[in-house]
Image 1 (tube, helix red, strand yellow):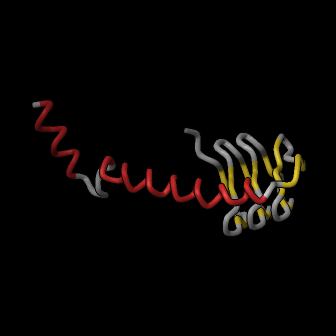
Image 2 (image 1 turned 120 degrees about the vertical axis):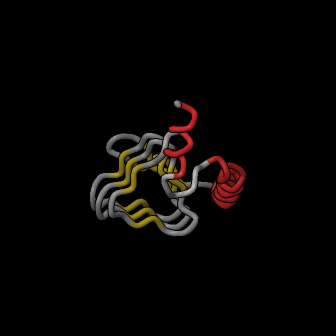
Length: 106
């Protein structure tokens, strides 16, 4: 899954940023707003509460339904649960792995 790029912007609570989206300097994504995957929100733009924006540059697509907005919290919780599930796959900060590599090469 592709990550989003957030550059000196404001993302309010319960906003949803799609995979591969870019939100540029000074942009604001308000509560319950959604930026579609791959969209580019240009500098200084505001994505109002409860709206879906898509494209490059990102433009208004539609108002989200209450059901759409309710899914934002469910999606966020699912992502957090997945992160916890996979958190042990990452090495701790440090250089112990370098010693381990030396032992396997020798």
